[in-house]
Image (cartoon, rainbow, N blue to C red):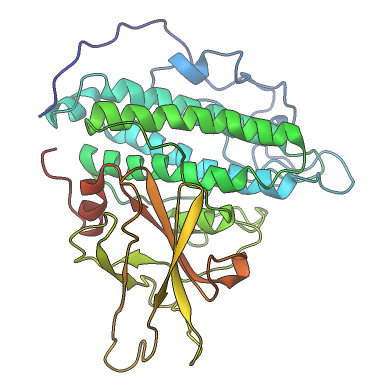
Length: 384
């Protein structure tokens, strides 16, 4: 049961009304509202780091630039910037995360969380995180060069209907983002881009730490190192599950680019434990996209944790076959029960290249471990 904390005082009142722009409703030649094209100017609208909208806005309306969802078209001719693909991928993913929090802001109230036994500050924190994510949208838009399109929002669906299921998914997304960002930071060629990503990662770490302490009453420390997973686009691809098929602006680039479209990987729903040393079955959850194992070739479950990984041989003979024989593997017992473990199926020890991976990734939450198995079963952690 949660101990209720005093509600934080209202620091100040901040307006998030859309920025005024001439001919706002007039369609431009792309068929989108004209205001969307004004966002091509990085000085237009509230600037992250200079506006309190990204911190202290407490309303439910969408804060700038989340209220302007159309793609932003190039304003200059020439080759794309060297890091444009990376930032386009990140902006498309950020639209998903912003909408995730915005949906919760609209669906729930402060009373929704307190009625579930959560601290009275919970809704306020969700608003703050939503504001931070709006700021990330603007930062990522401004990182894309004027010769490339800046992706717009799609329509999304999320598997939550109550405060606890929302917070459970939020915790998985925030903790998993650490493994994603450790790989993504390797992509930018420009040092300034790598610095910007580290700055964003530090903010996401604060979100994660708050959830572990206040929501789950868990140890917030994740060990001496977060998990390094080098293939960030493979983690990004798993977020396509939240996108309504066919709902993205047709001008948006492929997400993510390049996209491998690997078979999705999870532990079996009846798995009793996902802690190190647990034996789990591998579940390829998309019936339309199943792995193909070549006869006579050895495959491995590769588990990434901390700064290293461990490969465990798996028996794929006869899979799937008429009997649908399951593939079983044991999570390496040597791992600490901290942070996350990222699992893939690969045809080479250590999954040294993205091409060596044939299924996954699957993110195994170790902290809090009880939440990981609860999510597998579609339920919630006991004691919440």
